[in-house]
Length: 292
Image (cartoon, rainbow, N blue to C red; front, side, top):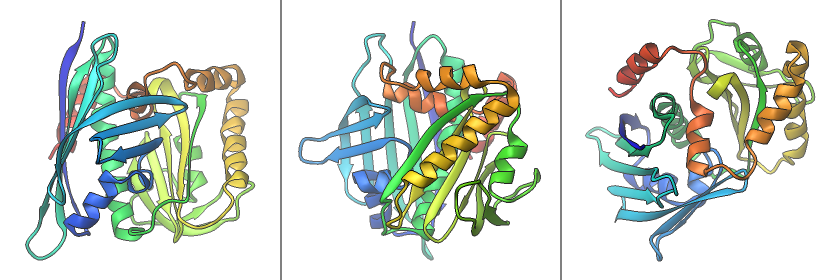
């Protein structure tokens, strides 16, 4: 049985409508703030979203440059699909208002996925805003999205990795503090305890997630010419270290297998950003607060 859903959100960004358009309708632009790999073909009116080798195909249903962009995913065998709509409006005095609508049909686990999308969508809209303000028109040269262990509480480890305490707040000074990675100073961004914390430097954005089924993720976007292999290994070691400390090495292996091909890409996106350990009523209340 399928269940209709709709998530609405709105942000104001320090960018022009044309800059917003480029960030949401070009593959390199989208890949600079969203997980996975996106391709947009305006000529054929199609998009693809690739995550861990599983590809979701969508049709472009609205294309009004600088104003209106919308897509609808091909329907899955179980009848589920997702649609996304972006409305862009220049604001008097500068900046741009971006309105986002995420809708479609969810499957049996619809409550958990809906709440995950409600909160996770806002986290990624915040990344879009940070990207537009601090990095655009540069696009990311490389990105990471790494699944880690299943654990009940890693907030202290997450905040320590960006050099801050448990009371982390956006705008605080940050210092990347992960063994195997050259320490780098920056600014705390994307904070949403106990599920999200990140930072930006002059050439990178990092976001750590404690998400679906208490799974940890490490993500990064790099805007310089660095070789990402060293940082990839360092983050994998960091995630593996969490598992070893918690005695969850088997669950780490299981978690990584869960994010291999064979899962719908759209479902994996919702699954990854779902906040950890928050009761349904609390998540629903948070979702209402985010859709302001």
